[in-house]
Image (cartoon, rainbow, N blue to C red; front, side):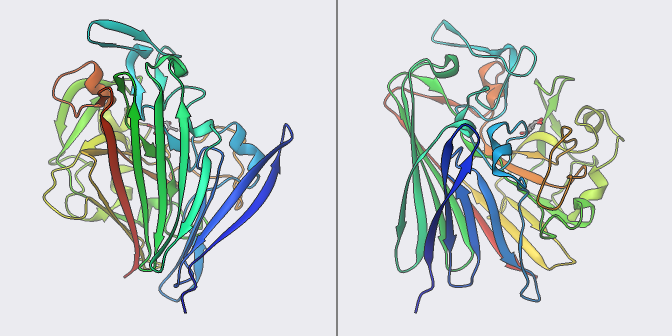
Length: 351
Ligand code: FUC
């Protein structure tokens, strides 16, 4: 008999708020836990090669800390994932000014982006999968963006340990939009080890060059012969140095948009040789921002204590906000009355 199920509970947070906590559980006993605030994923528990189930994502010890989540732990990001230079852009000759939240620039949809909204959650289950639809309406002028945008994100867990995130949206005015999820993965489980020994394979030969404010300069860099070349699987430690200008800018790691070559079915693969856990990512997005948690603000408290540098890795599948100002970057404009539909599949395995 199927053990697929959804568990629902509540958590009290500051300001007299109550959030709903959902847990999707499959036949293998793998589970994904998230809250309706920000659609934040707080737990993905998968077995290691000995069957020990542990959480492979970073999460705060205390739910209250998600109210001010400067590093976007586990959250849905919108309207635009990434940075918009000078918080401004033009559509059809009209200039739009967004709320700046990082110096003069606009990051991850601004201070009140989708990561800090209450989403309406409708759980569902079938014979093969359990899931939940998360919906939200972003009003016209939200954060400075044009148009009313209706968003529906679906979290699905299957019996073969696939966690699927689907994003659907539409707008009544043309607007920039590229949605993602900002979960920090660490396959060691319960944040036991930082990422140096975990091995990454990435189907990309091109990355954006960043300036000192982490804004794309408009130039593509070829990764060949650089520490950012992961076309053959290698340990992450090789990129955790200050060897090249782009590593220095990112504070000793990765914080870049990579364009997929689409030479392989699996766009990204991560493996932890010690625990045996693996993660394969397939997406219909044109690229990804890989962020290797190159610094954490003071005062961050996880269930396992303070996070160390390189404790988690974000796989932000998305398009590129640089396309608002530069040519040759994957577009993020959603035309009026058009539908936005994207999907990323995270498959967990054992090696
Ligand atoms: C990532 C990065 C940023 C930022 C944030 C917390 O997406 O691109 O540099 O630090 O997350």
